[in-house]
Length: 305
Image (tube, rainbow, N blue to C red):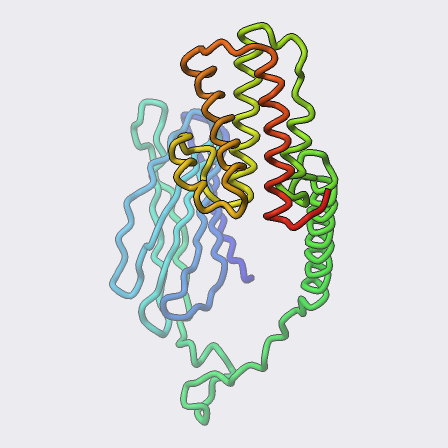
């Protein structure tokens, strides 16, 4: 970067024995059309002085694109962004800056030197542009792009590890769930499940009305569940009368169908009509339920005792 330093000194006279100094700096003496040039003007002054920087208006071939000012205690700085719109020697004119006293009265002015700029075309400045190139810069070689193969390879390995861990976790969870008692019924036949549930019913203290009602609710649910899982009808959502109509299609003897419907109707009477059945009747219905499941399963699943 080329620097031009201008230095001017003026005496304040009556106000102070300290001098006011001006320094100017430009980043280059040669530029091209439209390329910005920065012109810095710095003024050092005593505390008793104020700086009045003028509004700048240049000729058509010189444009003030932007300006910024920074005023400190003993320093005032102006930064001017200049743009040239013609080739040849163009002068940045001198700039007169007023120095004021503490009462804001101008006591004198300090002037920067003019600067001669050499403005050339882009073609003249760039030696790579010659007459034989038709004003076109030579094509640059291909830019080497950094390879990311290793990065993507590592990323793929990490993803494979995560997916593998996820699959193994799901597989272990599934094995654990399948081996649990809650899911063991999935691999068992409906009659096996029904018989196990019937045998687990507590027959103690069924003399109590509430326990008796609970007993018949369990009997009804187990038999309906067995019918639903065996014949694929929604017996759990059907009334006893609706099941009676379907019973004609059951592939076992009619007396088994009659036994099933009789147990379900008895359960309905206890649940909804508060029918009071004796302990002997409860035990009989329990045995009849087990007998129904065993005999009907022989026909449906072709099993032996």
